[in-house]
Image (cartoon, rainbow, N blue to C red; front, top):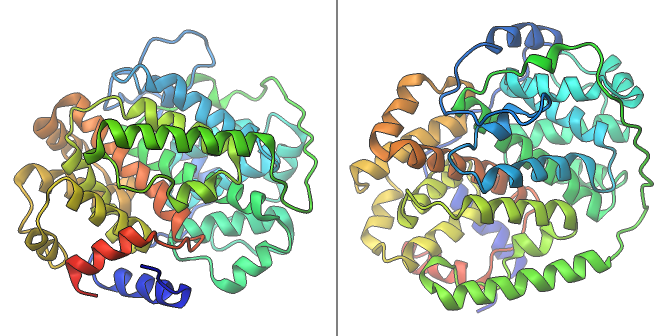
Length: 412
């Protein structure tokens, strides 16, 4: 079965409109200076999860927060370092994108993390001097301001980058760099929700005036190049996907190489780090796969993400969820089990308004799923804050199998 590209776009509209869980769209209403001042209040708060002991003074609390998932902690550090410091776009530009997203959501922790790193280099300090205040990014006519505008619009709405916006971005960035901009935006949307759900305190060193500087000089190619790294990474991913499907077919989607991965590996370092973190975090199974799929389904429908919604329907059918329940879920939550409902309600709240998550919200999650299970619910929610923005923003075509199953379930 082959679906024409125009039909696929019509499917985007139909799927986005068929679930009644529209995401809220926060607006940047505070300056960076005000956000940093507010951040001083969370230097001594207790995190909602235990923090690992510091091995060095520079250990970041967002890595230490994975104490109960020890294999995932080094992968998280590697993911952050790879997203920021590897690739074809200047690290300072990517940090500035993160700071802008922290403004959008008023995430104090991520604002401090990014601002601290920006002011340690001359290039970062220069970007901070011209950083936009509250309100939209003014006149995004330079590569730097365009990157900030891209991050802001995509954070506010997974479909927030218009065709005109995208065309303008592509006059300044090649295909690989556009994927890198998208990965950066997706990662900080993950990190913001992660930091807010776990109420991570700001590190002692974050407000210091001086820190070791690192000079960065990155040549920006004018065209996309297929690299040896891309080819080798894609082949490795294909082999792993086929092997995983053989060993546990119920855990896969029956798609050896999803289009999301085909696109993501245009930026191979970031894609590989994201895959490695997902594999490390995915080793922990306090929450069963059907519930995790319900979480990702809830996030994807809240964001109106056509690509990921189709994938979750496919996944739910493969683990045995019947059509009647899936049809009911399109209308309301009445078909969910009490455990699924707890996870889904938390996931929607964290998706729509990350800073609104309370101690009571997280305690309810822990009561239902235990300490490790609560952490897994948060990580699954964050995964799809990332993936929704990656797939639908780039308007990736849905695989035929996902389209076929969706039509079988919903009849359209």
